[in-house]
Structures are given as C-alpha cells and as structure tokens.
Amino acid sequence: MDAYEAITTTRAIRRYRDEPIPEADLNRILFAATRAPSGSNRQPFRFLVLRHGPAALEARQVLAGCFAALWGAKRAGDGYDTGSGTDPTSPKARMAATMQHFVDHIADASAIVLACTRARHGGVLHDGASVYPACQNLLLAARALGYGGVMTNWHQSEAARLAEICGIPDDVTIAAVIPLGRPVGHHGPVRRRPLPDLVYEDRWEASAPWAVDPPGTRFTGGPPAP
Amino acid sequence: MDAYEAITTTRAIRRYRDEPIPEADLNRILFAATRAPSGSNRQPFRFLVLRHGPAALEARQVLAGCFAALWGAKRAGDGYDTGSGTDPTSPKARMAATMQHFVDHIADASAIVLACTRARHGGVLHDGASVYPACQNLLLAARALGYGGVMTNWHQSEAARLAEICGIPDDVTIAAVIPLGRPVGHHGPVRRRPLPDLVYEDRWEASAPWAVDPPGTRFTGGPPAP
Image (cartoon, rainbow over all chains, first blue to last red; front, side, top):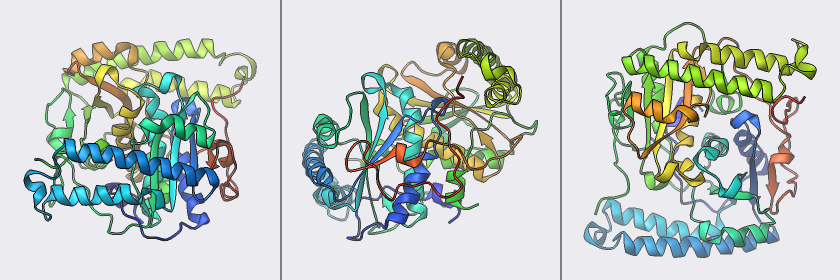
C-alpha cells in the first residue's frame, strides 16, 4: 500500500478478530520496527513479543487486570456514563463501549508487544526519541500488512510485576504495550485538531499560510467532550 | 511509494541540496506528522517550522553554533581523528566528514522543524509517546515525497535561547530539531543490529525462531568502533 496513505490512515485499533498473526507477518512487522532511528544509532529498543508462552499467559492476565482497573477509574472519573454518555449512540458512549471491549479482551489479542528501552531512572523525554519512532514504524507496518494495534501506557502500575514475569532487567523500562491483531472495523483517515492549531511558522502560534487541511478533513480536539 | 519500503529504507539524511521545499510538499509532510497517535488523542505536539522569517534566521545561527560545539566536543572525545579515523576511507572518518558537513551547513537547510510538546518539568519517557511517533511520521512522509531529514537533540544547551527567539512558552519543550531537504545521496536499506538481538519472545533475551533478518541484510552495532 502507498506510504503516504498508510501514514495518514493508521487508526488506533482496539478490537481484534480471533485470528493468529502468521509468523512471517510478525517477522515483517518487527523487522520494520527495528529500522527506526535512535540516538547515534545505538538501538536501545528491544521488543518482547507475547504470544502463547508461559510468561505470555501470565503477563496477559496481569495486563488484563491493570487495564480493567485503569479504565474503570477513568470511566467513572471522566463521567463516561453521565451527560451525553447516557445516549448509547453518542461519541462518548461509543468510545466507552470500545474501551470496555478493549480491556475485556486485551488478554486475547493475537500478539502483545512490550516495547522496551534502556534508560536511566526510567528515562526522560528525550530518551523517547530512541524508542517511540520504532513503535510508530511497528504500527505503520502492521497497518500496511492488514493488521492494527494501539500504543498504550496502561501497564505502569504493574511494570515491576511484568518485569519479574518476563525477566526484564532493572535498567530496562517498558516504554509501551502494543496489542496487535486483525482489525474488527477499519483503518481510515484519522481525526486531529485543525492543522493551523498544530503547525506554526517562525514563531509560536504564528500561522503558516501553507499549513491548511486537505478538503474533507474531519477534526477532533481530544477525548470526547462532556 | 510502497509503505513497507518507505519504513525499511528511511535513512538519516544529513546533506541537503540547495533547493527549497515547495509549500505544497511542506504541507503534506506536516499534515502527515500530525496524523500520529498521542495519549487519549490529546495532540500535545506542535511543529514550529523555520524557513526565512526573522526568528528563523536568528534560530538558525544559534543552532549552527551549538551543533558545531557539540560535534567538536564529540569528535575529540570519541576519538574520530585517531585510530582508523586517520584513514579517510574508513567508516569512522566518513562518518566524521558527514557530521562536519552537517554542522557546517545546518543553518542552510531548506526547512528546520522544531518538534515541540507540552510536558511537565521537561517531560518523562512516556511523554515521548505523544510526540516522537509524529516525528517519525514526518520523516517517513518526507522520504515518501523525495526528501530526507534527521531527528536530532543537539539543541538542548540552547533550548532557552531558542524559546526566547521563537516565543515558545515555558511549559513547552523542544523534543527534537529536524532539518529537512532534498538529499545529496540516497535513502536505502538501513543497518541495525541482527534481529535476534532486538526482538525476543516470551522472556527477555529469549530468541524467537521467526525473528530473523531477510537475506542480504547488513548490520551495524552502533557508532563506528575505534
């Protein structure tokens, strides 16, 4: 598929078909991930793939538990079941249904990738420049091959437990947890803020005349409004 | 161009032709950047593009100064001019020549993008998940459209000065500086460590039988050896 189309239409996919990912495709997806840049090409990123091994089975249960707890707290705290959320056709209610399905089924995803990196004391922002480009390569390659996934950080409360289960060393941080599978639903154009809100020229908040959205672009400002 | 090919052949490009990037292409590159995921789709990333404006001209000089200083220190400290570095055909000497050219000409790049994000106290590792995927989208889209760039963090000693010149608020961090231009030289397969060093299954450092490099893959373990 076309590169520009892949980049502009890779959605966060949170519902997966009950189909394994063939190993040849896993190979291509992980190879693509590792082609990403890193500072001085030091390649501190490591990808730990969970499928059906003994550690994977245990880690899946831990992830299911902490994802469910975090989503439960967010669902209540952010008022997903109040206001427009009481209408099941509202964007808020539909997002809540997707998230509930996601945490209820995360343990069953065909593969779950722990994207790890070596960084001192858990890492600072700039350490992310040597692992998150690789995560994005992984998601784009998955999309190009007919799969989907989502980059999450909901594992953090159980990071020590996951490290113990999988033998991850003390100086390594799990930078992201990325479930992968064949999408239920579709990729397609993603929604973001209008381009002039995100792209400036010369000075902060100075609009660039050329930074305009293509005709037909649809927008969103962030999580569903109350 | 094909998505998988773009992902696996995007090199760090540090030499640029003296050609402007048409605004229609800048538009497409920045639009692609902003299609990246971020936590809860909050889109904290902002891209400040430097071209020929008054702030850009001043910022370019500041970047040229701090890149040259940093490279000078690294060139001496890492012994680029000793050992195999005395042979101008060695990988080490060629890398040194490329880096010297890069810092000598950074001020003249057709466009320099400051990738910024809002993050508390400069940000932790996980804040990078909401800005570096967008930087990678930017580099991949540039590659797909015939351009190239490189993600750098060499601005950090002058971050406050750059913020002052460009009016960047206190709660915003420059996550990366990305010069862009039409490449001298070519994109092509990138070199990384062997896949079994980077991809594990089930447990840390446990090799996955499917995680093998395609035939003909060439490797590198990091910066040039002494």
